[in-house]
Image (tube, rainbow, N blue to C red):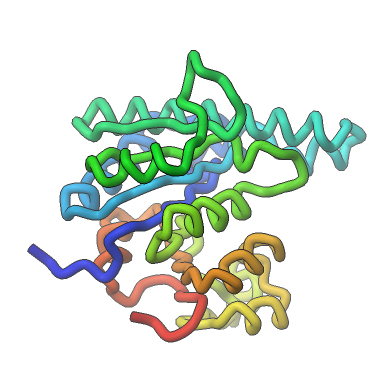
Length: 242
């Protein structure tokens, strides 16, 4: 068996990654492909927990910018992450991966309440755990939820899976053909350069708790496996690469 670089990970999936080329909603073929990639690393013995965004259905900040109450708009975004989490759970369990959804807000008909010790026990038993509804409070992003859950789960790394982006660049590569990709960055460099990898709250949580981050392209099949094996893909943030 291949040697693992990371044995417990938090996979951060953007909502847009689940939409595929349709840019809205959930593409069953895309979510099936992602589930198969997760199963591949799960079979290697990696303990996997997942935080899913909701941008393919609703973005709280967009609703707020259009005049909606910010807290209400963010609550709607939390519900969007629950929809995505249930869809991902369904895709995983259809291919034989036992999965639990834990929500930061109470909705017992759909998901377990988030309890740290229970989540850790699920991981130890070989189950994939999907964390839904962010941290349960408005004004916080799912990036912050990923950083917080990574700290609570004592994860080795956050794997930040992006759609159509293979790492962190100094400029938008879609707009600047001469944009330069970074292989390694520390968190202070990221903040000083103003790179929009994750919001400042999430970045501070990762920095203060020494949680590394790997930004990579989820559209490339096998990239999650390459990430947990420590292969040189994407951009590594948070210190010296393993």
